[in-house]
Each structure stands twice: as C-alpha cells, then as structure tokens.
Length: 327
Image (tube, helix red, strand yellow):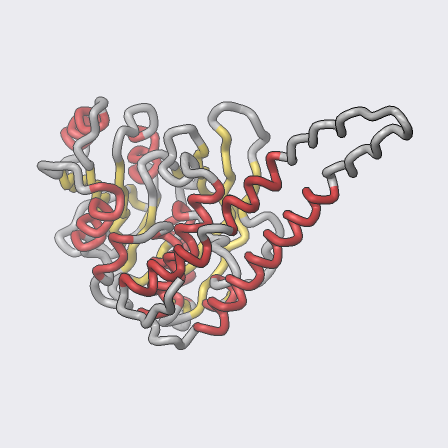
C-alpha cells in the first residue's frame, strides 16, 4: 500500500478540529499520516485560536507534510461548533473520517478498511469500529466502546436509543445531507446529530476491530459538563432534531425521553430508599426529635436534573417555532 498522498481531488478528507490540544495534536496528526491507503487523502485541520502551542505545532507539521495537511487558521475563536462547521465545509473528499485533536488512530489500515467496506456496501451511509476509551489520569482501566456490539449493520432507530458511536471511529459519505443545518451550531452533542443526519440516508455498518483510542481528560468539552448539563443539552438537541425531520422520528425521540425520565425516577426512588426512617421519640422523657439526616447527594442530583427538563424542552421548542404552552 502507498503512504498518505496529496491530491487536488482527495477520496477521503480527515476532518480534525482542535483547540488547546498542545499535548495531543502531534499524535493525532501523525496517526493520520501513518495511514496506508491506495487512494489520495487530505488532512483538514480547523485550529480555533488556541492559547497554547497547538497552532505552532501544526505549522511545524505542515512544513514537513505540505501536500498532505491543510490548515484552517481562524482569525478569531469560533467556538467548537463554529470551528467544526467551517472545517466540515472545507472537506473535499468523497468520504469524511472524523478525528478530534485529542484522539488518535491506532491501526495503519483503518481508513483503507472502512472505505473498502463502504464501497462494498452501497446501502451504508457510514461505518464505525470498536475504540478504546482511555483515561488520561489512570483512574480507570481502558474500556472498549461499544463493548458488546454484534450487529454487522444497524439503523437510525438504534442511534435514537443512545449514541454508541465514538467520533474517532466514524467514516461517512460526504454531503449526503448537504450543508450542516444552521441550528447545528446552537446545540450539543454535535457528533450525535451528525450521525443522525447521515443515518437518515442509509444504514450504519460495523467493523469488529479496535482501530482508535478516544482519550478522556479533564479539559474535554463534554466531560467537563455536569450530568445535569449533559442531559439538558441532549433533550434540547432532540427537540431540534425532531423539528428538522418534521416529526418523522417523533416516536423514537419520545421513547428516549420516556426512558430517560423513567430511569431518573427509578434512581430517585432508590436514593429515597437509602434515607433512614426518623427515630421515634423516647417515651416519657421529653426530648427534641433528632435532626433529620441529610438526604443522599444522589437524590438531590436526580432532582436537580429532572427539575429543568420540562423547561429545557419548552425553551428548545420555542427557539425553533414550536407552539409552547404556558408554564
């Protein structure tokens, strides 16, 4: 196989977005440069005005690989979604492979195998493989994601049950759905939405090989959010998706919301069961009742999550023109 080669008409665009990835960006780019392929590739990197040495490192890499790396050096910080939209629009390949600046590929034939699979299966809109979730602080052992997947191919219905696709495992056909919708820059998680937009146009293929590492660290945009914030973002995102598809997947979206609320209620009930009954006052002797014991932190967390759910959905519907009932 030939090493990565430049071309004015690449078959695959490696889409990479980065911000303050000084410690990781070289490994990410080099893992793309090591790919052994029989077709031309470009590495398109959107650099979002990092405050560390990320841009400097990228410029040094480009000097050594001027025909392989295309840098989008923004003049001002666009934010994660803005940077992604600009980089996505710049990708020229027939296929797009996702690789964020803090992840890396571990198999030199990853791209070749995924492109071959997509060309052998024209009904597939995209395909993915197993990745390792690696915890930078060593707090947990690496995990395989997904850990027990067995379907050779699946559909958007499974994707509405939860996002089981790690970004660094994805290769998809470019421009199946045209430009990104404007509302994509207003929501998170954007990678889940991107997969839904693609899966609307075809099936999702699976390769049972470990070919990338997804790094979990304290500076990750999504991992920095609290559980409550993550769930509010997901619910708001699903409202936009429902509107975009004009209600076609409303049953799947409602099922996800119902399952989420059901699981939160069950969790709340579990924590309630951990609260001991107040002790009975001693007979005859007049003593003040014991002070109530603090509720478990988990119960308060569940309530904190559930309380704004309805408001989050209401705000999301209002933002995109859905009729909204008074609170």
